[in-house]
Length: 324
Ligand code: NDP
Image (cartoon, rainbow, N blue to C red; front, side, top):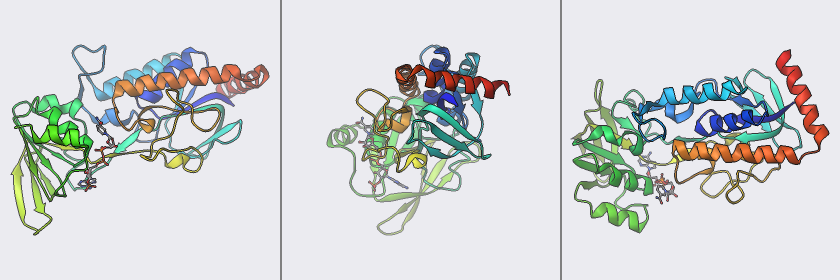
């Protein structure tokens, strides 16, 4: 039995692992079979993570976080979690190969998945003009014409932010009115660089190596047009990855896991949540990392509050597993 199992290998999961490992909790981190490193593995240059004055590639940043977690004794399993039983004093996490891992505490940091348009060339051109993160990639579109798709707060925020770089920003929205808050709408409407394309869906993304344009459909009359662009920012929402804990952990109305106040404590004793899976608003690598820290400290305090013989038994079982 482990003292703590961390699920997720984004900035929240790895930072929780670094702190837990340095607190001698010998964490087991379950990464994922294919998406190790989380969303940052899909970005290129990361210029806003403190400590890297010249920027760092997203995958490199995540490999450094992984190495740092391993340096202090984190064990990492590259497999998908298939089931979890979090309700009892001993939590059980089952992975794809059928192995079941027990722990006294669990940190759940599975992140969120940006919604996709579902278009044929969207994945292929991801990182080559198609982006889900204006703060990460806006800088690469200086003096270009680009578009944001979506009608919520994220789309308005991204569009407004992108006018710092781009000469022209289209906002392409499938309706004739926005879902975004009035303040965000007003800011976007008053920006001379932003032009709205209403009642319009994107049917194609064009480009061989880089995005060159999009094919549009007017939903009111079916008319098809083409718009030349260098970049397309998809801002149609994100869904926290919570399917593994449905029925066990309380969720907020926006789908994130509910935590108590500024802590990472969920409704279940010994279960903590961190990163994008609890955050509908900020969703930055650095805020996720900070949230992972909070979770590791909360788990450490929780474990310290348990009767000593229970933790000693977990430690003994843990060293037996590691030496086997
Ligand atoms: P939302 O779910 O609020 O909005 C998503 C938008 O994308 C909607 O306009 C929706 O259209 C559109 N959309 C969804 N799917 C598709 C699709 N397949 N094709 C085209 N368009 C699509 O997500 P957000 O990320 O904007 O916001 C999430 C939450 O985060 C909200 O609560 C928001 O208030 C908050 N937030 C707050 C910010 C702030 O206060 N600074 C900044 C960013 C987000 P339709 O309207 O037709 O459904």
